[in-house]
Image (cartoon, rainbow, N blue to C red):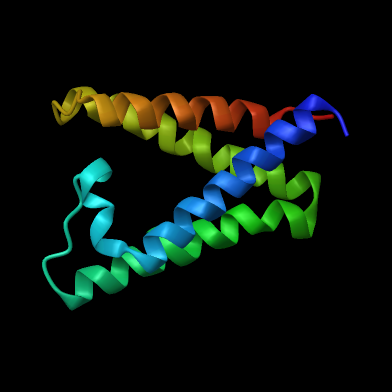
Length: 115
């Protein structure tokens, strides 16, 4: 196993771990994301999107191989593209947004590179 595949695995596992954390502790993500669930509906939304979807996206590469890694990478790069624009439009240039952007770009690039 080469370094690139190890990094891809770390990115996929990190994605699934983020999802698992969001599924189990949905009210704890506000410390980093600024997203606060104002009631049970919001908690369900966090568990569904930040939880289940991130778990599925993180597990997909292990089920579907290289295509799964590339799709996950494309997802990260799409998020990064939107985030960079709206950091300025929404005037949300806070450290957690810059950290998220950096992770999204790094993970995205690692994941779309072919072997």
